[in-house]
Length: 129
Image: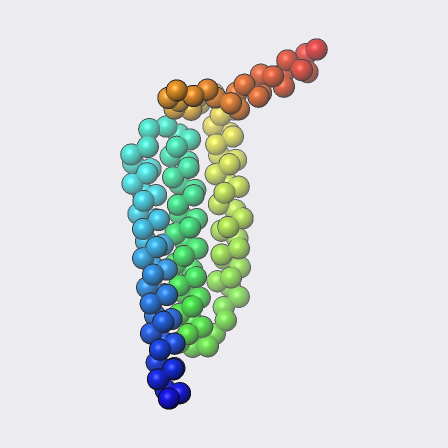
């Protein structure tokens, strides 16, 4: 009976690992397609930061579960890598988009206004008064 439960746990762990790997591959592939297909700098930055973050985290989680399931090893390095990617990738994308906006690159707008530019103008008017 115990060997049956252990086998079911192994099968479940393998299914979870496969799903995480497939999800990670999907997000990274969709990011590559987004970089090619999206029209503007800011939409490409969105594709280059959001999807790879989820993709890389999914793949690292799959590696973590594999090491834990097959070798009973808890990898602190993988957990730190996940934390680092969760913190640094969105912040890096935000800084790149802000630098692009400040250098004069206009967003690709359809039926919308650039709200950040309106905010900066309003802030400058308030300073002048």
